[in-house]
Length: 333
Image (cartoon, rainbow, N blue to C red):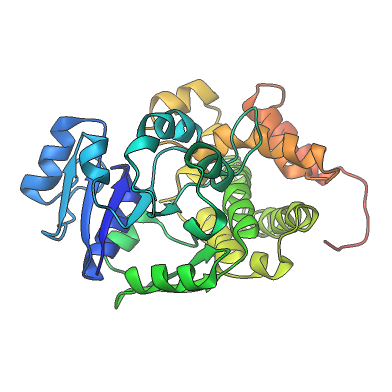
C-alpha cells in the first residue's frame, strides 16, 4: 500500500487511478477544473471522461497540485505530453524529493525531441532510478471496466520496477517489468502515429489487408528508431510494442485511429480537432518523431507521410499512394 498522486484527471489517468486503488493504495488525483475534481471526490465518478464507471472510495481529487502531491510516495504523470514541461515547471518544488515519478504519457516533445522521461529528469533532477514508464495495450475504458489486460512497467532500476509492479497488480491488471525505458517510450509514441495512418486507411474504405500492412511496417519503423537510439529490439515484440500497436490500430476506442479515420473520410485536421474532446497524441508527436528519425538517420516513411498529412502537405489518398508506390525492396527491419 502507498500514498499515490495521479496528476491528470483524463480518461487514462482516471483508469490508472482505479487500478492503483484496486491494488489497495490511497490515490489523490489532480485535475485542472474544480468542478470535475469535486465530482470525482463526492460522486466517485469522472462524468466527463469515464461516465458510468464507479470509482473506489479511496480515490479523491483536488485542483490544488501541492495538495495532490503532499506525502506522495509515487507521482503518476498523466497530462498531455506537450503540456508536461509547463506543468512540471509549476509542480517541481511540491514533488516529494524521494518520490518515484511514473509517466503514462506517449509522446516526444516538440522542438526538443525529448522523450517524456527526459523532460521529467530535466525539470525535477530525478535520476533514472526514480523515473518509470507504464505502457501497453491499455484502452482506458476497458481498463476502468476491469476487463483483463496486461502492461509493462519500465525503469532502469529493476527493484523500483518490481515495487511499482506490486502497486498496480490487480485481479484484472497484470503488469510485467522491463528495464528498457527508451524502447517502451518510443514504441508507445510511434504507435500513435501508426494508429493515425491505419485510421486514414479505414476512413478511405480499405480493408484488413491494408490495415495489417500498415501495422506491420509501422512496427518495423518503430523498431528501427529504437535500435538506433539504444533500445532493446525485443521490447517492440512485446506488450509495449506490438501489443499497444494492435490495440490502438484495431479499436474504435483509440483516439488516434478514430482521428485518422475522420481524416480519411474527408474532414480537415482542424475540423476533427474541434469535435474531439480528448488529445490524440499522434497528431502532436508525428512531426517530433519524424524529426527524431531524421536526426538518427532512420527511414520512417509512414511517420513522415502522416506528419505531412497533418501539416496539410498531403491528402489522405496521397499518403496511401505514396506508401504503396515506394521502391520495392527485400523485407527486413
